[in-house]
Length: 459
Ligand SMILES: Cc1cc2nc3c(=O)[nH]c(=O)nc-3n(C[C@H](O)[C@H](O)[C@H](O)COP(=O)(O)OP(=O)(O)OC[C@H]3O[C@@H](n4cnc5c(N)ncnc54)[C@H](O)[C@@H]3O)c2cc1C
Image (cartoon, rainbow, N blue to C red; front, side, top):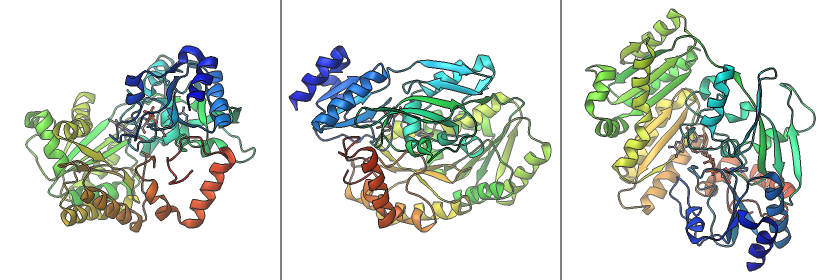
């Protein structure tokens, strides 16, 4: 194993570090999972040839390589432990091209999502995928996890924005997949396959992404309190069913609201929402100067489910209402340790999903404050860890994943499988598809050196 450090250092010099502090830092990500042991080395890549050299050497020696962006992942996908090399891409952070004529940008993988968006602004362009971590996560990490965000119900998840990729394969070969053109159907769609592959098929070293005209016009934001979260969820499903297409539709349950109230102070919520209160909060935002009848219809649907609404047509109040939703994770973090989970259900089953969460919470005696990207049926149940990762948390999470599948949903809407959900993968995919996916992995990475132990229980 010393061999690999010597070989990497001989080729890559100062890009290789064995500094114990750095080795410890990359054992974890924002999921809180800590890999057993420390990696052999960290490569801080600044160019594609360094990525190629790292993989060529690791492949020759049969050593695992964990690609890593900013380490904000919530599934432990970028964590490196015993016997592997962690390959950090965050220093490959150049925006290589912005081309308004073709509506594309070409970036290295370490570009921070919000930095790309800021660079596009002077051109009147916009990068739509907007994970709540956009200020701290990389485009490479977003691609590898197929990240979603608040706006993705209307504007699509990361996959919709990726046109072409340069990828380094496990043996160090550099390939290009996809098209600079809007259309392109030559061969299998390997670009789509790499998106969401969590660093298990190749390392993204360049991405050509679709950029859009920045939305213009006014936003209209509706905040609504409901007596119970089920009613808020029903209203969200009704808005989807009525084809109203809000840009943002977010939902908080009563426990999340309590945490936000404690964190921001009751006055902040009162300023945004007036005296109304409740056990479920729905936030609906229409952009691009919506037709008045669209907004009226949404209000009608919300009120039909018992919601008390506040409609704001100015951007500042809209921001105040959004701040309630944005405060959810900081509020929970401040209140103690939580496991942030992620599952999705068909949008018509949102209320049933909240029922299932309440049932699992009561059965296992675990508090599960939950937020949802209600526009796309993606829920984030947050397991409160009063005594660390006790068995009852795992049991409750197992039951919840099963409930999501029973509702026709999926184990993960946007955070990925990583380490934390690999034991459940076969439950959703079934034995045949699981095997097919393992075979696909073997085509790209015959020795199983890319992100070993992630996504699949064996690699
Ligand atoms: C406060 C907070 C809010 C969040 N909100 C959202 C949200 O709204 N939506 C959402 O989807 N996620 C969200 N996340 C999760 C996380 O930010 C995303 O998964 C993000 O896409 C990870 O990017 P990263 O650069 O941190 O990648 P990392 O965490 O470093 O890596 C994530 C995965 O991608 C792989 N990877 C990274 N770079 C590459 C590359 N260049 N080539 C191949 N594989 C690579 C890694 O091996 C790993 O499997 C949030 C996280 C936090 C902490």
